[in-house]
Amino acid sequence: MLLLDSRGREYLTTLTLGKVFHTHLGQVPHEQIIGLEEASRLVTHAGRPFLVLRPTLAQYVMKMRRDSTIVYPKDVGAILVHGDIYPGATVIEAGAGSGALSLALLRAVGPTGRVITYELRDDMAQRTRRNIASLLGEPPNFTLKLQDIYQGIDEPGVDRIVLDLPEPWQVVPHAATALRQGGIFVGYVPTVLQMHHLAQTLTGDSRFELVDSFEIMHRGWHLAETSARPDHRMVAHTGFITTAVRCAPRPARAQPVTAAPEDAAADSGREAGAGADGGAGSGPEATEE
Ligand SMILES: C[S@@+](CC[C@H](N)C(=O)[O-])C[C@H]1O[C@@H](n2cnc3c(N)ncnc32)[C@H](O)[C@@H]1O
Image 1 (cartoon, rainbow, N blue to C red):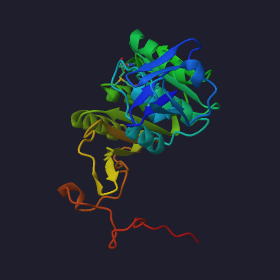
Image 2 (cartoon, helix red, strand yellow; image 1 turned 45 degrees about the vertical axis):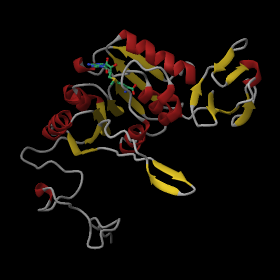
Image 3 (cartoon, helix red, strand yellow; image 1 turned 45 degrees about the horizontal axis):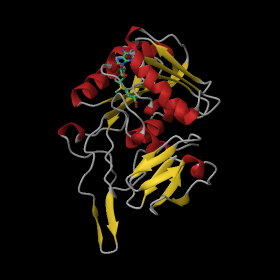
Image 4 (cartoon, rainbow, N blue to C red; image 1 turned 180 degrees about the vertical axis):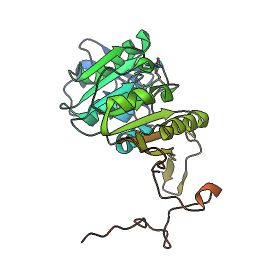
């Protein structure tokens, strides 16, 4: 459970009979918390109030023990949506790290989907197993393989491939073979050079189209009775997301299909793609008869 003090500080705790929750604000035996409805209130022996919440996935991954950098919740959301991770999908993931992304993928594919995660290091695999177990137990649709994904992908016909490792371009030829036609590749990397190399590798492979790279900015706001302003601090950079669609191979000499229509302004770095009104839905139109 997640205990929240009156200043909004979060304490993640696994409830166990006989244990006591200790803070500088006082103590509460776990027996007093077990069985409470979520979002209940309690007070410590020192009379300090706490809220008792079931942690959201975002709260859990930010509080769980980590042995690697993780994919932050703001990026997880974009990976799930732009990678179009859907209930029932079979997803290949690498690497496992601390399991933050694995948890989100498992939730998105649901009980009818599968997540198969490749991880090189045993210590990372153990950390992922523990972090998943304390939130979900042992999901039968999760497979963790201690295996180097740069050497290949064993599973054919998968729906999605999601990578968070240093050289995702090494996986591109394997991904092109393992993904079903129409399947989606997602790569997450921290530096511009990695993003560029990945996008170039995908564009240069005739089996991938709609290569698209972007990043997500999340700016929190401080809101009080007499103040409304952006927070002073923000996480300014995490990583870049690159997506591509596995398609029928491009005929020799055909141009790659880009993710958005380009115009003459695109290469000069000026904004492209907005209509005269600058509004949504100003892309090309199709008519049907
Ligand atoms: C940044 S961490 C992944 C974090 C994870 N996405 C999360 O949200 O917790 C990168 C992981 O990739 C693993 N890795 C690196 N190269 C790999 C490879 N060739 N095959 C499989 N895993 C690899 C590393 O051992 C490390 O655990």
